[in-house]
Image (cartoon, rainbow over all chains, first blue to last red; front, side):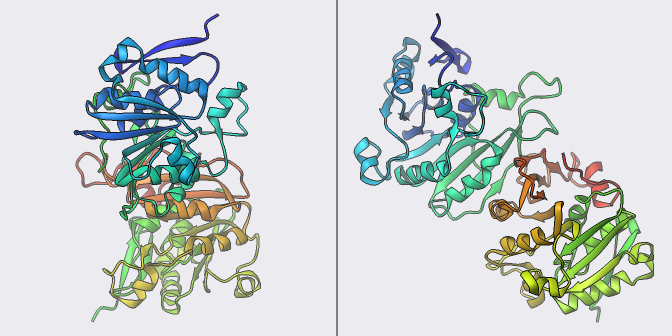
Length: 255
Length: 255
């Protein structure tokens, strides 16, 4: 019986071991999230709630000087992350990656003691669990945990992101459109310069995701950017720019 | 010395007397706001903070059975609204319009006593003052009043809208993108089924406005719709659909 899969991303440039039939399975969301990170020189990146590590690995794969910390609460998923990092096919960047088994919602001294120091990271990325608790299409317990939107989740996670980022550091996340107010509210005074990009499957269709970046301690106004449309006229293939983002060829840069 | 202007909208189908050099001057924002209202049969519409009445008049001009109440606090602007309604060129719909000089922020009995009854309207539209108080490009006092974004304005205005709408009635507003979280938050439990459409000047540019509709007592999820792009390739003329909205030829319907 197959209990896990080996999946390739960025057209085979890196690989991920993921549980089959349990836990969250990463895909395009994680790749688009990773595309929000841009740094030419050395930089420290934390992937909060990293799961098997898809987003963080995509950052390390594209950015040659990025050091990436995968932070994951579930021992099972953290183990998948460690094994994924150790795959021979990921040797190109595995020395720049590490895995921390810790709960993102830890605060204050408990957070620091767990290994998440204040003012330490240039980038924090997160793909938080975003099915709400009433969504019963995912019966599996581990997947339910990964997908369960708990009240105040963004508030808790952005508190941690705000603490561990350097001043001027960048928060990046991907979420559902209905979370937009909760996210902006959780940014509060911790983050400014919020940039939101809606992701639409096709021209004329409702958004299915929002891409959000924000800067710690910025006071700049929120910006609603031009949307990204995934599919072109034929309705099937990805638009070239979205395909580039999905395959780690370019970053989606802030304005 | 010219102190007022006579402006035509919907390609000359209705007219507005507006103060020159003081007060808020209506234009495309009001026309797009009006396009959010759709009803084939008789319906009651309130335009909150109506100014000289552009949005409400645009609704009455396009919808043959709509009865529209313009609600305006400023005696000066309410007077412009009354005189505009009375213009011969507006006779086609003026019998279906009335002007109420009242403060939208009134609550409870004071609001009802002022003429805004509970559960009365099918539609409420608003184009709330949305320059923030720190914007000093508008020195004139009356214009500053019209443009001053006061803390909690959406909360106050949506409380009134929620009270005077029938259950299932529709709120429509136009605002700046940076107000998005405040608007959603003010919808709270009063409104659901929030639909947001970003308005971009050109493809690839940031949004300059958001169009928002919501339904009283709905529990439907927020939707981020496909954006509207004002200008086409040549960069100057309006896109045909936006031009139709701006000129009262079509409604921008909810999903």
